[in-house]
Length: 216
Image 1 (tube, helix red, strand yellow):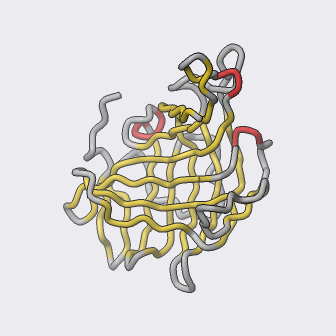
Image 2: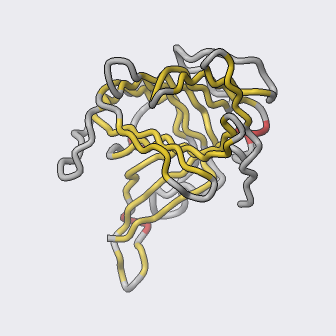
């Protein structure tokens, strides 16, 4: 899919980042904003006060904001066997222009199979420890900023918080759990804390346009 890195513009107003333009006025986070495609974030992280909200076509068609589902599948006769695949990660990605600087971002929900959860399931956010997988009711949550050229600006894992799944739709393909690319939405609400002063509230419902299958 061809994407535009300048669809979503973010302005700095009195020290806060506000989504400029778009199809709706700013709606502050604080709860899940429903099934209508959207991405909303509010809080403070890495010296920036964030308050942005995006709705409309930019989210609905997966152009400026999208979801990627990651599956893991064993190799059988040199090919990944999707009938044995498991859902492992969910990433919300997008583009923003911040004070004239084009960036991409990723919200990563790691170490938890959201596809297995019922709507309303609450998952606890815990510190990331690479050699210790989260428990079944836990996950890691990371926020990443990257320049359009691929230079890492920030990669930070939250230390605590909670995520509530509200939607994970899409019909898996025949003989497995992998939902085809471009089908299905993921929606939820997160309250995540990085430090005493750093905290984000995040609401989203986003089309899943991409899949990644990791072989093992």
